[in-house]
Amino acid sequence: MSLIAITEVKKRFGDNEVLKGISIDVAPGEVVAIIGKSGSGKSTLLRCINGLETIDEGSIVVAGAQFLPDEVHLKALRLKVGMIFQQFNLFPHLTAGGNVMLSQMVVKKTPKKDAEAVARKMLDRVGLAHKFDALPDELSGGQQQRVAIARALAMQPIALLCDEITSALDPELVAEVLAVVKELAAEGMTLVMVTHEMRFARDVCSRVVFMHQGRVHEIGAPEEVFANPRTPELRQFLGVQ
Amino acid sequence: MTEFSFWDILRNLLLAARWTVVLSLVSFIGGGIVGVALLFLRIGGRRGMRVLSRGYIQLFQGTPLLMQLFLAFFGLGLFGIDVPAWLAACVALILWTAAFLAEIWRGCVESIAKGQWEASASLGMGYLQQMRYVILPQALKVAVPPTVGFSVQVVKGTALTSIIGFVELSKAGSIVTNATFQPFTVYGLVALIYFALCWPLSKSSQRLERKLNVAHRNH
Ligand SMILES: Nc1ncnc2c1ncn2[C@@H]1O[C@H](COP(=O)(O)OP(=O)(O)O)[C@@H](O)[C@H]1O
Ligand SMILES: [Mg+2]
Figure 1 (cartoon, helix red, strand yellow):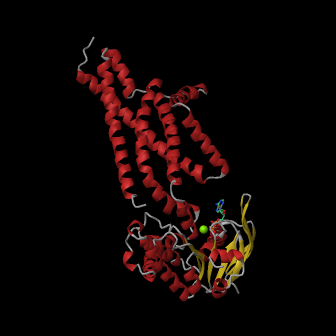
Figure 2 (figure 1 turned 180 degrees about the horizontal axis):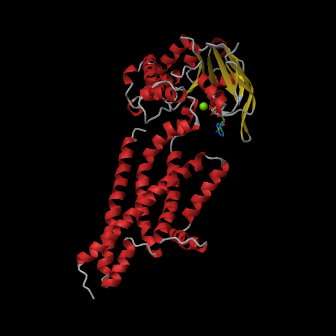
């Protein structure tokens, strides 16, 4: 059974149909890379899975629970899937530890002591145990993004959505973030990631989705998609003839 | 006719200045409380409430404070309600201050990056939780300098209440002038006292703003 079942999803912003009937099934433990040109709807798709945008048609089912746009269902959905953003979006008024503790205490009502223990564990998992008391301002971009990953992990999601999480980083900081993601993948976390890191997609992902103009244009195992692009659009995108 | 010494004049003005201070504090605190309520209606309430609070803000920002004072003082009198000058002054200033503070604070809340809303939503927080733990703590920091800065306008705004007969610093100035025939000395002192009240406020607003900018320079 698939963990995330996306069926015929359509999304419009006014007259602009951004998603034109997307269907993707993600199995538990799968790592799916979404690639495609800017404006092809990749972010919108992830945001729909997380309920940050409401869909106009189709359905999104996560772990058997249908997505419905009311407060109760949204919260349930968001507890199941975590999201990591390109701009990190750490809470600047809280320390790294505070960032990881906040939603546990506020949303799950975890006692402070337990939340702190989890936060320390999660920060350790991303290699930042020693930065527990640092403010986001005092961290490098790569470190901030790793804190954001720890923050999402602390809610014990069954899947993580990553939207170009290394695109805002200086080149030398990309590797440390990807290493964390790779480790998560190895531990069996289900990941859906929009990425421009083709090497990473090839090495780590179980499937690659190429989106073009709001549609799934090609989908398949990375070897296949990268070695034998079937459509001219994908060939052009990959820069091969 | 009794002679007024310089010190008599100053003493009388300072005594009246107490009422300027009290009126400013009441307006500011009362206006702050009403302003918070307006703010929440303006950004988070139902549609009807949003429209209503926006209308309120536009009404009070779009008419002179003097008219609001007249309406509070004479308007309620038309309904047979006898309003003392101090009450009309407080009510009008509170409502006027609330409109401006609500608008200042709305700008502060909206200056918080959209990503903060999205990140907190993606972690499962509801609207009030987002506000309470993520947005307001950041907005509050941004809000301090303009809020302190606006308090200067409140202090100066209290001068208008002299027109409906509330005896604060300005009114005391004209009363003392009538008794002493030394308008230049009297109004010079009045101006100095206002300055002594307002200058520290605007100075600290500037200083807070600079401090905040330094704290944010890494963004
Ligand atoms: N909130 C929005 N309102 C209107 N249009 C939007 C909004 N978000 C995205 N879009 C439009 O949807 C299209 C796809 O955007 P996006 O999903 O961000 O693409 P990608 O992530 O693949 O670059 C773009 O044309 C963009 O302008
Ligand atoms: Mg995008």
